[in-house]
Length: 73
Image 1 (spheres, rainbow, N blue to C red):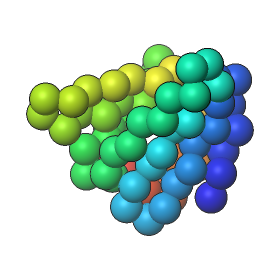
Image 2 (cartoon, helix red, strand yellow; image 1 turned 90 degrees about the vertical axis):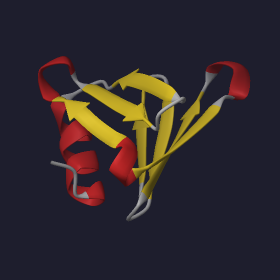
Image 3 (cartoon, rainbow, N blue to C red; image 1 turned 45 degrees about the vertical axis):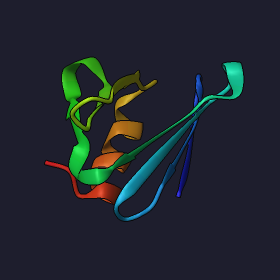
């Protein structure tokens, strides 16, 4: 599943997410078990120990799709 957002696109599988950003052609990867969401701030947070990243999504619908697809929370 692909979700377009203002900073690029998110590619979701059952256990992984790829965040491909428009600027700099940067791609972040994370396994579902390393992800959490902060709903009030529309944040997707990846924390795999030494590697961490955070993305702010555009709207609640995008966050809901990610939560459902990756079975977060």
